Structure formats: structure tokens, C-alpha cells
Amino acid sequence: MDTMSDVRAVTESAVIKRAAYKARTVDAAARDAVISELQAVMAQREPFASRVDIRLDDEQGFVVDGPNREVVPLGAPAECRFHINPLNLSHMAEGKLDPRMAILFSQLQMQDGAMRTAVAFGDWLADRKVVIGSLTNQALPTPTRDRERLRHDLEAFGYALVEGALTPEEVRVLRQRVIEQAAGEREAGVASVSEGAQVVWALLNKGRAFHDLLLNPLIDEFVPEVLGEHPILTGIVSIIATPGGKSTTMHLDQSFVQPAIPQFQTGLNILWFLDDVSEANGGTRIMPASHLGGVAPADPSSPEGTVAAEGPAGTALLLDSRVWHATGNNRTDKARHLVVSYLSRAFMRAQENYFLSLRPELEDTLDEKVRIMLGYRCTASLGAVEGPIEGKMNRRPAEPVGELKPVSRPGH
Ligand SMILES: O=C(O)CCC(=O)C(=O)O
Ligand SMILES: [Fe+2]
Image (cartoon, rainbow, N blue to C red; front, side, top):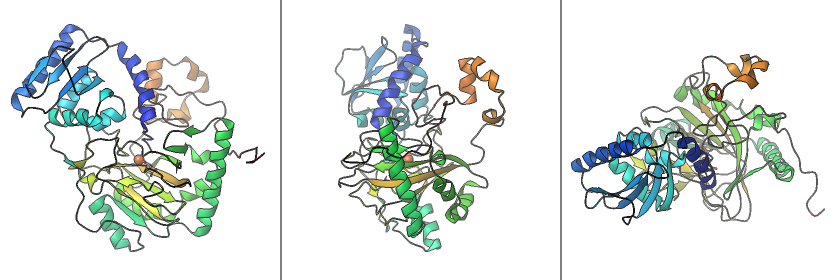
């Protein structure tokens, strides 16, 4: 959920990022340094198949002519165009920034052409050989109560489906509260709605049932053995795949860990099914075994190479935070409701807990730079208040959104 990474959010954040980078205007010397870095890379590699137009800022840029192994001035024809600052371009070349993550968090901002060309360029630049979405030929996970098989599925494929994780009564209560809250938020004009989904954030403010869900024995059964003791809740939200919705952008729930470290899992996401979930109604698209690091999407905007997680209401999907996935496309006429609880390792927080200890009268006196250090800024989808808007400086809400119900009834 981190990563409520629909394309709309990515585009909005691109505007914010662009403004932020104005402060670091690129001069001709910086541009020439980048060009010589690229020329050195090109001399060592097989030619790159396409031509890409790279803008370091609004004025400085060049075209990488892959087939001819040359960097040429702007104006030459190119198959795709994107913005990236010199630091991020260097990080991409050094393999410290995955091009897919760079797109997700607007470090690489697509302007024109196919996303897959930009991704392929980033992989080529880092000399990274990625297998694009290859499916394993073993039997993929299906819902089961067999603990041994669940552990095997999680290790081998990066996900597992727990049959009967919720009782029918738990499903009923959670589902009703989610539906009511989602309708109440739409009516109050505070809903997070995108093309593919409605997300209800910060569920702990919105019903005791969500608190109680965090006490479900499944969490103690599976989380400490992969993340250690006392994990931190990164978020508990509901994701409603709305009828006719498109799939969201493919992502990892630990996308914010850069350079990517496939050897180290930082989180486990548990997706609780409140409806019967299938491929047709937007079952989570998963790239099996992608947690092992060798498999990744060619184009993060496409679900190619994935399978849909399916199971009856009451199933829980355990999802390793290194697995590529997205919300599926709901082709039915009914919404698909999930509650998603994402836990991270205990150390993924600050040492000093200023959210509790900062003297209230100091809050308004802090310099923006200090605010960023304290976590007021939403960065790489983290630190959000009612939904991540990249680059937003959050304030303490006067009144956080609480339990809501629609006031007007349908038809009235
Ligand atoms: O809506 C879904 O199926 C997936 C949601 C997701 O990506 C997440 O919870 O991290
Ligand atoms: Fe996710």
C-alpha cells in the first residue's frame, strides 16, 4: 500500500519534484560530466537498441543514440523522453536506483514514449540482466490451511494464500465498516479515489474492528519468523478495486529501499479478502518468485507476466515486500474490498520519537529542513497523512478523519 502508486499520483508528484529540483539547476559543466560518464559506459557495453531523449532540467539535455553508441544534441529523433537529475542518473548507472522505482517515485519522469524503453535503458545502463516476468513451472500457490505448504509458498514464490484466516462473522463486520466508511468519505468529499481504486487510509481511526484485526493470530504466526519481533505497522488501509478500474502501477512494497537489496526482506504485507476475489474482480496481480531478484516487469504500467491471487472471502494473502505486484483490473460490476495491513522490521523508524516528545509550541517554529528530518515530508510514499502525496509537507490535521457513514441514503 505504500505504494498506492497509481499513475495519477505519479504525475501529480512529478510536478512537485520538478519544482524541488529547480534549486539545483544543471549547468553546462554538470551536463558535460554526465555526457562523458555515459560515453564511457557506452564504450563498454553492447549498443542499446533505442534512442532516448534525456532532460537533466528544463534547459539541459541530450539524446542517447543507442544503436550508434553516441550522445547527440537535443532535437535528434528519439523513441522516448524523460526528465532525471544528474544524481539520479548516476545512481541508476551505478545500479543504486532501479529504473522502475525511479519511475514510481518520480525520480525519472516520463514525458513521452513507452515506459518500457526507459526501463530497458535503465537496466542497460546499470548492466543489469533482468528476466522479464518469467513464470515458474511449479504449481503456484492456492488457498490452503497446510502450514508447511504456506511456508514453502512464501519462500519459493514470495506469497501464500491462507484459507479461512477470517471467520464469516469477522468478514461481515469488516466489510460493512469498510463499505460504510468509503461511502461516508465520498460523501464528505475526503475520499481518495483514483481511476482503479478507492483507498480508505488510516483505518485505526475508523473502527475498532481494524484494531482487532491486528490481533489476528496469523500475524504472530507468520510475521516474527520473517521480520523479527515487534514489527512496526507501516499502514492499515482498505483497497477497493472499483468496477471498470484499471490495474495500478507494478511495485514492490519495499520500493523505498534503494539500492534494492533482494537478499533482505524488510516487510510482510497481509491482504485480507472481504469478498470472493478472482482474476475478474481485480485479484492482486503478482509476479511469482520475483522476490528472488532476477525477475522484474518490462513495463511497470502493464500486468504482463503476472498471475492473479484468488480465494474466497476470509482468505489472507501473505505477500513478501520484495514481490512485484499491483491491484488488478476489476472487470465485474461489483467492487472488490480488501483490508491491507503492512508490517515492517522494528528498526524502520527513528530513534527519538518526536511525534510523541516534541513540545507542541515548537512545532510551528521548525525550519522546513528540520521538518523534513522529523518526517513531516511524504517521501517515497512514507510519512503520509490520509494518503501519500509525494513531496507534500504534512501538518497535524486539526481533526483526523474518523468514523464516517453516508448521511444521505441512495435514492434520497
Ligand atoms: O489492491 C491490491 O490488490 C494490492 C494492493 C497493494 O499493492 C498493497 O497493498 O501494497
Ligand atoms: Fe503494494
